[in-house]
Image 1: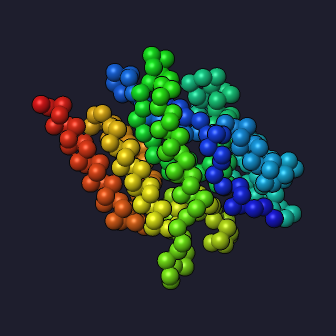
Image 2: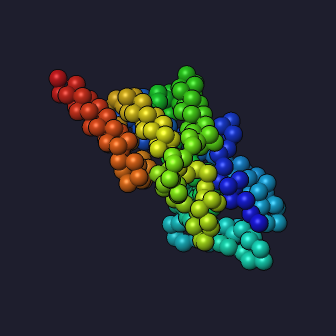
Length: 251
């Protein structure tokens, strides 16, 4: 039987890389996004499911590549799929890799990275993250990973985890086999909120705050639903930071 908790467990922080997403208008800073290489995903599937316990296939449309990943459960193959458009570099190869990784997220692989704060960092003239910024990024990643691996004990009377940090693994799985990327305890929601507030402090323009809200919309939605007090703290911090930046720019 496939161990879905092992499948969705956090990766060693050394296996996680960072790339730049949205850029500041003057191109001196960008939003750092965590990602994993497709080969790391393949290794996870091999380790958990066995080399003969999973398979994938691709289909193509005019603008999108779709990857289906199947995992053997007993005598049956269960499939999940997702797709991606061409990337900026090596378009076809990038689309295959992105579609594969997105399909793996459907199985929980690397899903926790979607809930990681995306801080603004300084970049060089080639749009690469400056070396001095990686210490900060590594700290954010390790804090987030520790919060998942060492969750606070559930409060008395708590019978089920919340859906704050990630969509639960469905298809008939019991609650105790949900992705370990799900942040179940209120204490861990607070850790995420605290990291989000620290990230917002690095915003340099009102547009940075707006972009941060957009990029973290899914996590904020779940935070509001399951931990409204923590959501209020983050929302107020974002609003106050945006107002302060707007006032500074108008002065």
